[in-house]
Length: 107
Image (cartoon, rainbow, N blue to C red):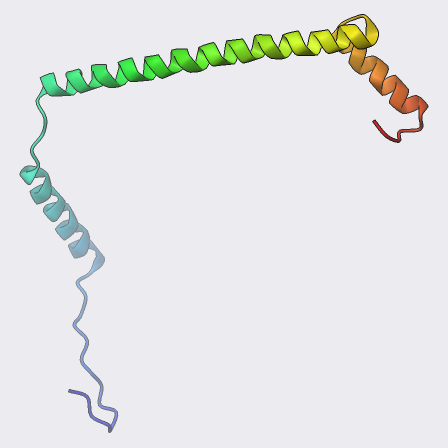
């Protein structure tokens, strides 16, 4: 017990680094022995389920990407055809020429 006179409290000395590492590995090994591991059959069954779900969502996202890409291309090529009578590239070229002719102000 510490007194008001400033007596030091004894600290419990820590074991050295290598002893602590050894204890950690020993305790980890004990915990791994307590673990119940699934059978191979269960692992492959769950793996199959995961692969099917991933494939399902991959196909949904791929379909959405393709549909939105086609919609975007249809919209942008329609705008370019109306504005310049050509492609998106010619529309962008004409837009930048107009911007340069106006001194770079306003779009």
